[in-house]
Amino acid sequence: MRNSPFRSESCSICAVILLVQAFLVFASFHSVALAAQQPATNDARVGTAPQHSDGPWWKHAVIYEIYPRSFQDSNGDGVGDLNGITERLDYLQSLGIDAIWLAPIYPSPQVDFGYDISDYENIDPQYGTLADFDRLVAEAKKHNIRIIMDMVMNHTSDKHKWFLESESSKNNPKRDWYIWRDGKGVGPDGKPLPPNNWISDFGGSAWQYDPKTNQFYYHEFYKQQPDLNWRNPEVEKAMFDVVRFWLDRGVAGFRLDAVPALFEDPELRDEPYTGGTDAYGDRKVSDIYTNNLPEVHGVMRRLRALIDSYPGNRVLIGETYLPNVEELDKWYGGVKHNELQLPMDMQVGFINKLDVSAFRKHINEAENDINGNWPLFVFDNHDNQRSWDRYGDGIHNAAIARVIASVLLTSRATALMYYGQEIGMVTTPPKRKQDVRDPIGIRGWPKEKGRDGERTPMQWSDTKDAGFSTAAATWLPVATDYPTVNVETEQGEPDSLLHWYKQLIAMRRNDPTLRDGKQLTLDENNSSVLSYVRQGVGGNPAIVVALNFTPSEQTISLDPAIAGITDNTVKTLLTDAPSLEQTNSLRNIVLPPFASWIGSIQ
Ligand code: GLC
Image (cartoon, rainbow, N blue to C red; front, side, top):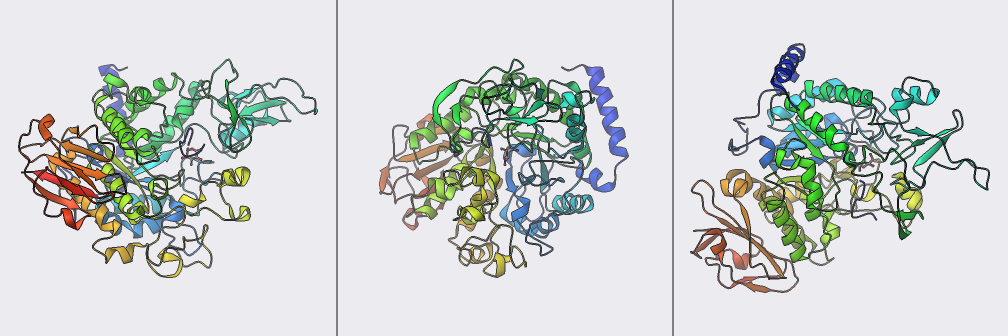
């Protein structure tokens, strides 16, 4: 969530030992885990087109984020759960996704709806049990869908046993597992002064005073989310044990929450003020001493070595809001490729306006400036207003949503989606402060309304609670557009956004060019239309994509010479403009407002 733009060594003997250890651990686990640990090569797909075995599965994957509270309630309590997700696997398979990223389902006081974990090795009862989880993994595997866990390593809940021990006394062996410091004496109001000016991402000082031991602890997020001290090797060991627990259970990888925030400046230097105040009234600072410190890369390399000791191409995805592509490349390990396989590229998806040159620049950077690493594009998640609203102009939102889907799914990057994106769910923020559930919305109201708006229940049908639940009241209200914007209705409409997503995902799965072809910019001075070519792979034709980013008709003539192609004869593969269906040449293509066109060069 940090810097969310919307808001404001190896040795061969060691490797052998690790492999033997890994085998012994596997052998002790039950069949579900063993079944899920088969290597990911030769992915036979049930009910979907075959995916070609040209690299690890995650390179061509569509990963789908589920916010478990809001996806499907199976027991009528108004809150989504694991069995609900299992019930909906047929749908997810028909959509064509390869993996689910599950937002946190661990036991939690739910102050930050699961991002405050009180036990890393269990399931919160409101979402189900470990047996339900194992069933989900096993059933998902039958649907060729992998499960990726959200791993919150920066902080725990203040109710986690590690913190309860740590806060109990200055001499407790776990005291140094968190960041405890003396304050700067007492202020004019008689209150203890924090160690420095660091502020929480969620408002106010990042230091919480504990009268019992007369010290402060550091919390990047809520005060109920104390930061772990990653300078203590015991913390790393404990957290890596947690990672092994889930790998042994058969998960395909992890999405690392707020991971650039793991380390803080040991000297506790004040962050520089940058002028003005944020939505919470705090003076704005540059977070140079609390974010993206270089020490984090050592942890990432060790974590990568750990997951690579498991079979099946387990993957590490990072929540990496970073300032530029140079910083992003470091998270892959640059030329060494030895850190995360997929740190999220937040440059493309969060431009937040249809600016052709910004899209072109950032797509080119992802293609060319990350040392042969593999990009991961994302437009939507549980922390940001939905792309429907961020990019929509209020008139052409449906066409614009197709443009965004086309960028996401015809680029050479792995694609990350968020539930409901495929049907065009809108952001529905609370109208009154008393209805807000997300604490940052309560604290920041009305400037910051919180993240409830992008977390409303999934809209399955035009029935009670949109088919999400049978409860009298759901944890967040269902958005009012559910009678028309829902899965069942859109399944019956050939021109729906849902069908657009399904077609794009199927094309991407089937076409080696869309899967692997190098992406080259066309018509690079055009400020209204984004066009690119994907170079043909394995004798398959090159593919051209042209997307009108404006509300006016645009005429383009594209020259694919940059891809070594002299022919201009094309065949339309997919378009949302009937007038473009018969397009057979790259000359004088007339794109209606916000039209998307995808064709192959014959
Ligand atoms: C990440 C999560 C966000 C959470 C924060 C603190 O940014 O995506 O939802 O509030 O971390 O864990």
